[in-house]
Length: 136
Image 1: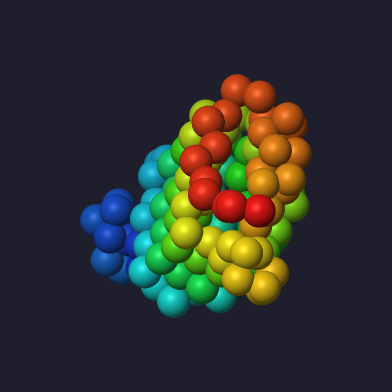
Image 2: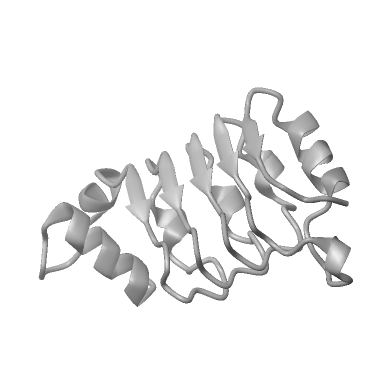
């Protein structure tokens, strides 16, 4: 399991040492991995099968690959990253709120999240409120 995830889980469970068991991982329903300089979705996150809220705000993520396995998520914050695609998030059918503010905007000539991508995701997740601000 990724060190960043393990540290966050241990802090939340107040378990500073010893093996993290399956029972421990099942207790984790909320995880905050904001501002951790992550460039990709950390490996091991998929083991948190009861996770319903996840903060990945203020990182350097360019892809959401790996999040599609977290099918119990109801709330996901991906604000302030470098996302150019949301492919895979359509599998998160339990999502009620998805926040994508301040990811690259294609108006500046770079790859970024487009209104079309957001609209397509919204069609796939009709019960999810998607918060985003692409201009193109």
